Image (cartoon, rainbow, N blue to C red; front, side, top):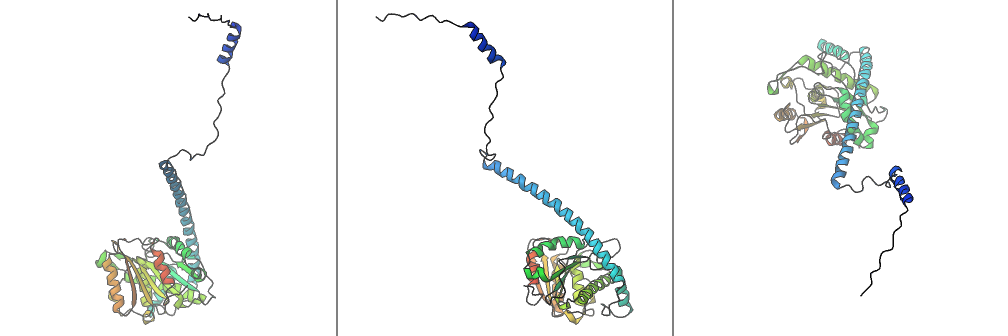
Length: 340
């Protein structure tokens, strides 16, 4: 039988225990900070996607603000350039090759000088080069030349080097009727719409004057391309069909031909051989596709060569990236500017 050994007595040092208890009670314990870690460690893909979406949204807001500031600056530039051009127009002689003949031509040329100059300018190229070319792009109803240039900046940025080196882009702003950014007044809609013939002729005379100034600057008329969007496309067609100068071509995006009843008597033979390019949205509700087809048929009836393209499912607004391949194809066409 194992003997039971009694426990040794435990002697407690009471003063020492009391001192330890006081230290534990009144001395603050300092927490040790964990080492820094990567903020992406331990996050799931869902968290990372949410963070990426926030970053992308922030970048989009910053880009939008920058675009608004850029457009405002472009608007101010357009006003300054347009005012200077209008002052130069006031001293210019009446063009001898106006759209119409006789007193009406002189009246329209006088009105064209009053309606402003070539407007905002983008990528002004030297006219001394034999490959120098000019694009005159006309905005739609309610638009402005500065807004057009904002869209065409992308085209210039993606254009071949030959285009950037030799191309000048002019974007006039409509100021007729007074107080409205319209090239001419329109009453009604669709096939029943009517147009102010005098305003159409006056705006066409103004653009013909812009072409004349480019010719005087050293750019041949055969290196000048007139294009337009919506109502600006209608005016571009009018200029090309009535001008006595042989142009490089005419481009129409979501446009139409006004005053169809005035043809063929108003036709000028100079641009019978120049190419006409038409781009239209298949779901356009402002200028229905039937209006574009009617314009195409009228042009072909009078012997014009029409390159007709329809963007299925697109509406009226074509001033976006969809315009890029179309414009670049016109720039590099062998029978057009051939800027390649």
